[in-house]
Length: 370
Length: 142
Image (tube, rainbow over all chains, first blue to last red; front, side, top):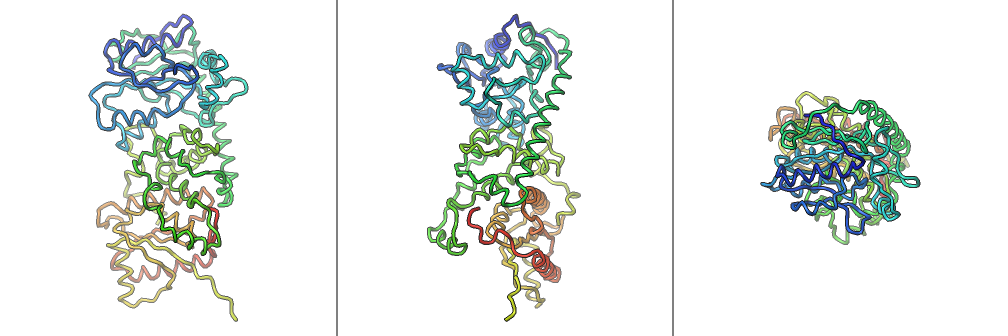
């Protein structure tokens, strides 16, 4: 990787937009999957761009994540592509792509991954509010990047998953855009794969001196929040009654599953005929127990989703954002995931070379389980 | 009149090639063991989705026994190793969600171990009697 410093002259977004535009115009990639601001101005959405003219609406630092890009990468690469696609992603999205590649749900061969430092993201309605009020939501956070720990706009909060995210700088990527530790209004630091740096004619430069310290302090603060949220989850879910109370307002919409980058099954077991019961069955259950909550199997749904994907949970928090009841699902998945992943020394998204725990085994392990 | 003793109900998922055949041998050898077990035959312990184990517990089963071939003896080479990982994950999740994960047992019992099968069921029934009934028995709002 080569380190380079880009002078921004007061326009950090413009500088990066110009760099991304060059990727497309100079044929380094055939397409870009990037955030574009919609015409109404109050949302920014991932968009697959082939024509560089469309990049006028580019909004690469918008602090909002309506969907996780990992699902889109799966969609556009799953059955193979000839085109080379540059994809702008936050680290949670990159880590989810790593998991999906290992789960054979995406192909990374023709991807040029562009990782961006992430200060945190707002829920979509909060972001829309801020934009409608005329605020430059991205600029407000960029202005705080040098010192680190950017704070959300007064009266709004970052998504809970972001508040407890301790992996917010790009861990993989051919091009990595660094914001923390220097003033983006003057300079943005980038790291590029050597071949890419050459194609883009980037000049070698020194890394931001304060970056390491700033990132370490942010990581410490986020980890503190994470540990506090995990502790409160464990305090609440001490027994089954606690679990029932934690999930009491679940409406069984399956939104958490639909929006999860790791829940990739084309036909989820909860949407198969396994859960289409004979009408008479409901009467039998009600008779046996005296009463039965409908729809049935609320706890089973969450427990099964944990079993199926918690080893690969990257903590993007899309489950939280998708929940109409605002259930803290991501906190549950990350807290439970912490212990389950530790059983196998597995860190989701860390490496393409480590098989997911459910796809492999060792002969000499888990002797105590039997 | 004596109070009826609690009789645990165990759902057993047994692999076709080893533990199910071991259970068969216990029967043909006329080895006595408690009748608290309801057997579901699978082709392989590695074919067991944890959803079925969770469902059994949520519906009030007092225990779940998963039986497979000894490590290295799987009819499909590696299914039991995969089952072991899934059970380890399941037990960790159950424990963290406030369930008693010791109601789930994974045991390797071969086709020639009819005695071990009978002993395992006897031991499990005693352990579950000591624990008492599954607190979820009769729960309507799960």
